[in-house]
Image (cartoon, rainbow, N blue to C red; front, side, top):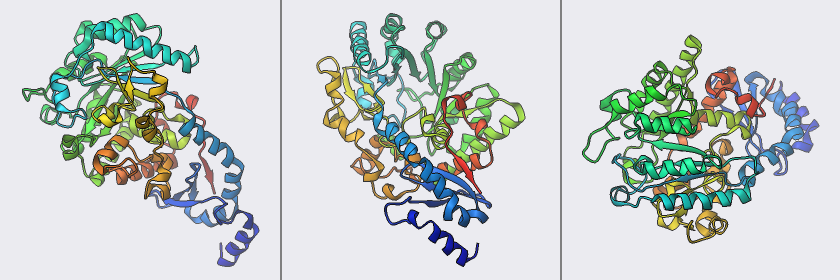
Length: 467
């Protein structure tokens, strides 16, 4: 289109001029030679456009499409960001752990000498949570309880008693380092349809055991792999790989390792910097991007070759959040994040925090489950500080095109690194490149290879093409 024709088109659409009241469209390069993304960041509207058609789209067709859908997009985003209520609790039945992982987000003293719940305490806590969720959730919907750590299997008898007593009231999950998951424990959890997540940080003992090790300095790679092999066909199973500077280069190899064993869901989570150990092991953002994307490329190659899908859940969540905001399954990559808003955390002594990442921060303790009304706890200042954290209040995030695909997580990590909540993520550049990669996946029509089975049934796809 010539400059003259561009001016004429812009004049015809003058009512949409960017005067502060019209749409704030931004062009995002996504690393393709023929396409760009155009984003209206306030409502997360976007379109993929051929580069040689960008003038026509911006002069009329794209604006018209946005005007038609802007209100519904805004309502959807506002509900997702501000309208949800808690439906899950991360529950630490013990503060102790049989491991001393270098990057753990919980203080070492707590993991060495902390409290473990009695069966009575655990069941009383579950009853209090049941009463709360009964008041706030539809009767037909079960809330989730994820037994978390430290290492919840150190409180196995108490935890299993709670699962047995309350299995008809909650969906349960257990996140474990896998070292205490014997056949009897696995059988019990599978009988009660408990979700099981384990951790493994490398494709070989020298990598996997370098940061994940017990108090004597010994890792458990072989034990974890044996458990993995037993669980690989269990539908409610996943593996978490915490990505550090020590193992980031092995991510493509990890894809082959998991794929060869038939794993279907894994998380490649960048290490959280909420404690000194994690901060010291943080990978460089550009190195993280390089190997993370090589790993994602490898999942595509293997999917084409074998038909077996290995979903990298943390990336799939970003991809689904772009395709349709309500498709998210995790609530980290949006602001406010899910902490205190979609879920909360309960410590072994009953203290309630917005998220497990905050358990080591005494100033983010909102109250005690045994002593205080949970409805009131969720309205305390520690919770309000987290649930009010919006990218619109963060510099430079408030001017970022992808702010609603990223969310500047994680507030606990940001607090540790920056000293304040309203600051950008230390992984900012990685998150930006991850969004670009997600747009490339969509532009190439490869979403199916990266998203969980049935995602289309859960997601109202909101992306479109403009030509």
